[in-house]
Length: 355
Image (cartoon, rainbow, N blue to C red; front, side, top):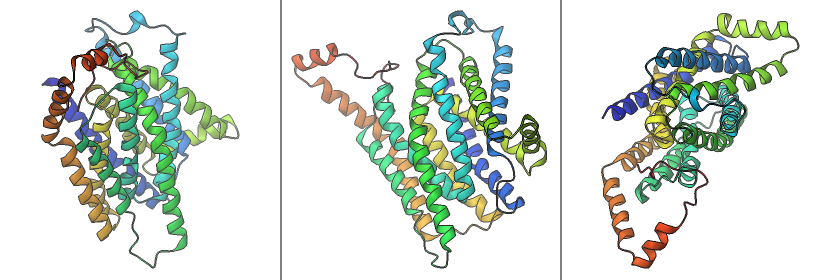
């Protein structure tokens, strides 16, 4: 019960923070003459550093009460430690692509297309973690993607070519980023749940964020002419740019909420939580930025709501139970073969998590 409550709270927090993420960037663009008024690579580095600091402080605060801190089996030079570098590096690339997409799309469209990764996430979660879903849940993932596509239907024939090209580029960025995000997210879930499962969440976060700081710093420095200009860019992003510090703080909170959702739920639940923010983003944008939802957008949002019901409805428990009964109804030879067959997943699962 406690883990269910924790999972629900983390999902709600992620939904709210994901909504505020795009709204804050949109507000910063409005104050910056239509462009993001700070260096996005500096913002990513500051976000990673803030997440690392919060994870470290939390772990130090919890350490005295922990029976297992994670240090007991930690080795600096080892394959398990190096494995954390993979999602950390992917996350840096993703964060920079997210900033690019946010600069090209309005908040509701960004949120909807950002949910595309939920389909490759479902596939990779089945292959890498052995997680099973009902046929209705797979249909709900397809409906979610359909809802995203419908919202992009243009009804304003007066829109300029530049605006259409900007939207097309933003959507393309999100599609590619979605596939990369799916791979890194499922790998991150495997690291959190399977790799040394006794280790505290914040200890694992420290390893991911440490690699994140290193890769983000290397990328940010490569974009600067000198150390002085790099330091000035960091200072401008955090203290001078409109809403820069608040955006960094919000993005750090999003990252920490994501790790909690992966710990207590899974990647698809995280994906649906993020997609729920589309409704909040559309309502807030209509008030703050004059966004007027088209009929296509409203239709797409309705399809997303249907997808929510199909995925989380109680009927899925019945369908999964039916699948289990069908498996038990196999002949003895087939059952023994299934029991003896090795797990095809290259990653061990935690008892075949079912949603």
